[in-house]
Amino acid sequence: MKKQALMAILALSMAGGALAAGDHKHDDHAPRHGGVVAPGKEADFELVARPDALHLYLSDHGKPMDPSKAAAKLTLLAGAEKTEVELKPAGDKLEAKGSFKVAAGTKAVAVVTNAGKTLGTARFTLK
Image (cartoon, rainbow, N blue to C red; front, side, top):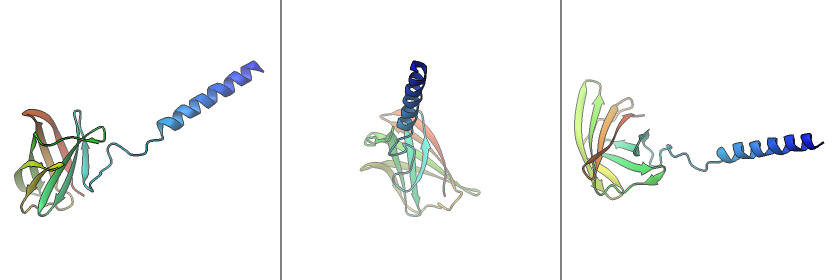
């Protein structure tokens, strides 16, 4: 009888751990601004690309990072056309305004720095 009770307790404790592990309210890599997310070692990057503006949001384990000392060089590859853009701090994101080709399938590579140190490189494919 004691063996059956021990087995039942063990089974319930394992099931409880599995339920707790799967009970995440928000995925850290889900887009929060309607863009495309690229996870990195030091930070996660979300690119929101519109024909008139490019926005890059930085986060650390789902928590927004302060972009005030950050910058990024973004390269857009649309077919044979290559465009390089500098993104600067603008509120809670890095931003560039202008005219951009951002059709579905466009590739983008961002090299992001923070306080003069490389924060990471992110690769995106626009949807």
